[in-house]
Image (tube, rainbow, N blue to C red; front, side):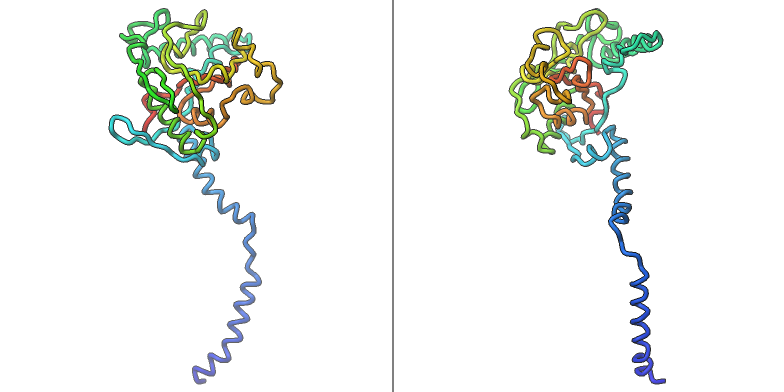
Length: 274
């Protein structure tokens, strides 16, 4: 059979076969599209967990870099270390073992802070650090404010500042004042404030409350107000809290004190930058 006649006869059959194939092929549903996206989300979540951040929400925020010692470094994300968190030293239970564990965590925290940030008289041993925290104190800027802190955490503050600017959260709040290192312990008994180590800051104490603190702090009007969340007891937006938490800071608003003005660096100072 001549080739041109074969092609003319075959074309209708080919068209029918193609139509049948299209009719039998399942349509791509929204569910299929979502399944296709799941591996991407899982990868993002895995990256977030590796960085010590919350899955998905933090993974969606841009990674930031800062300049330190004349070089550009990417900011590493990390969580506060559990044994340094105040609430873990004083478990709200009468269980003897839990109380014992809490006391041990407190001693571990004092030793760690002494080694990393300086020896404060009455807490820990001077053998662990020849210098007082004051020796490491250094002035820096944060969101247009000046604050003195332990120089080891300055890169972490700079990372938070870069994050606030990258996410646009800097435009939500414009604090006018903040405090840093102190040279007198404001806690009583066996506890020592992170302010004396220069690793804690307070942002606008007159606007961001401490409703679990002693007078006059607990007399603030926001402390008397019925709220659904501690975030409603401060002027600072929640977005700022999350920015700090991405880089090793712990917000004392989570504590029984509800100290919303207060952030303390409880990450590893040796892992602030990549």
